[in-house]
Image 1 (cartoon, rainbow, N blue to C red):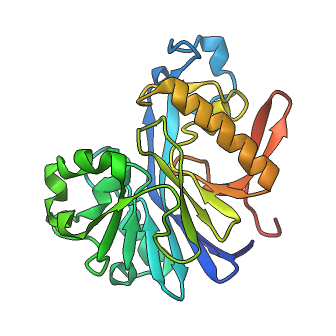
Image 2: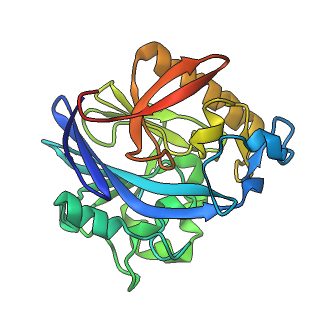
Length: 270
């Protein structure tokens, strides 16, 4: 992997014939009660030692990723738009910084259908944010939820079901990673970088203690099992990882660290 360019809201890396650009949608904060123990209980204060906090709240960055290749540009997730916290919705600004026009995006794939992943599909006027994205891939288990969201009505004619093993563009493969939601997907790029959506929400806690879950997980036990499986898989395979809520720049490597794991953000020369 080679870092081609990096700014405040974006970073582009080269992976063979494809490039991947991290696009920051901004950062917000959320209550520490969102982290839950193995039985679903709130974590005790001592269990939050080392957490990345701002005024007693968990920092939560939100990111999307653009995969560019000879066959077009695939945007994986779209940020929160104007549908969630006011500090989010910076994806258009990140695209400008990265030198990418919204009309260059030829397809969109969602890891899942939570508000901070799908809302950027529509602009502030309710129109298509990416007018040339003629296919919007949605995990098949979440098609009903997507279609039930009124703001997504303009997008519905472009929706395509997404299943395990599908390739939304050459060099990108969908990998089922359920638990956070029933259809939660990760995307393996060039067999080297796993864009894993919401496998980890708060890296300062969940890498060292991967049994810790998130209150928004649909099925905490399944999310925990998936996280443990994926963490071991990326270490064994030597894959890079990219995540919607990983700390800057949102791309890096995972290593075993004692009984848990550690995340090492990408830097020039890694």
